[in-house]
Image (cartoon, rainbow, N blue to C red; front, top):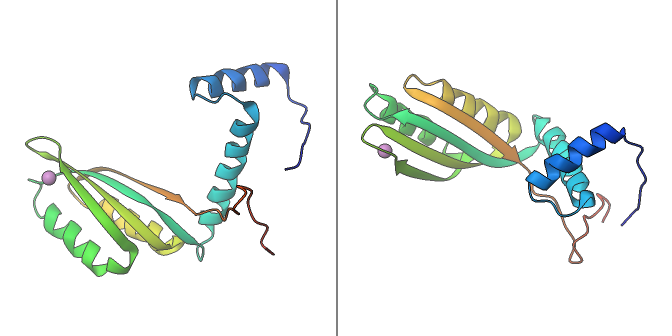
Length: 145
Ligand code: NI
């Protein structure tokens, strides 16, 4: 663990403290660490060749012409990216589908874009992340470890 001191504008710090309190952080250091990790994961998964894991969340009306078939077709055509899917019938019309995906970041992004762009899909979102290597004492490994 390294200790660092940061100079922050008092008003900015007040706003940050309010924000992290709302999110349930009891300690400022953990909130800073999570911000740093979030930035690093975003950079990591922005690399097209990086391996990304994540979820694609889709809302669609299963009555929309051909949408169920097209979703199934696209998923079979990209089966190597799909780890699992979960489907919930929200009401008479609406379906919620969540796919767990794993693969090259660029392929995952392209796959998500195609699903979300399908006519009949009302809303969709891809969330990517990447596993962080953590040693037994809970501290992240350096690349050379
Ligand atoms: Ni359904």
